[in-house]
Length: 267
Image (cartoon, rainbow, N blue to C red):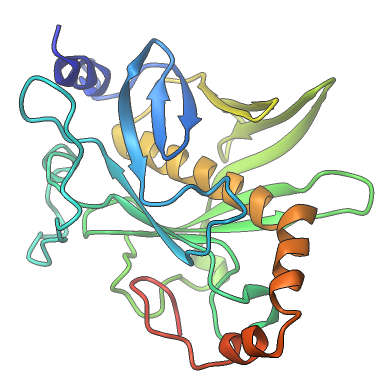
């Protein structure tokens, strides 16, 4: 069977329009279905699990395949700004171009002019909205997270996020304790289990345990990848590399230059 047909079978709807449970994994810049590991489902523009990643905005797109054989979406694809906000999500997801922009602004820990250290913006109208990842840390425990949704906001909105009282809890992400594994439980607002995340020896997995609407599945995958980016960027290795890079006067002066405008990064 052609690989593109395997991809289409993954995204095919049941009668209710929902997507089935699945076991996903991140391999380099691609999200794969472990049931068909040769077929990427999503692609990132940069590896968010690498400390050498210097990007402040990473694009997430669905892999496109219009003929037999695997073909990724074209890097030159752009968002159609004429898309009406009420367009059906099934039509939106068939378009070429990004789904979401994952953002971690440069020098975020020192800045007060950004909406969050880690956030996601929707690439086009008609999608679920923008998502802010809010970590909650304690001295002796791994952080928990809340993915907060600003309904129907996009990368072109200003501000990117609704007022705090208008944001909705999309995912409650809590660490679990399993020997040798870095695990998180993903629940919805009502406490229903949506997914379980596992990191074992550098292998990143997301076991989706519930049927869900396609736009919610896309938001879940994007939020998972952003949480992985958080773990990488906040790691001791990444911080050590950052301070090493700031050791020279030249590097420090370069970091203090005015920030270049970037798509979906608040400046």
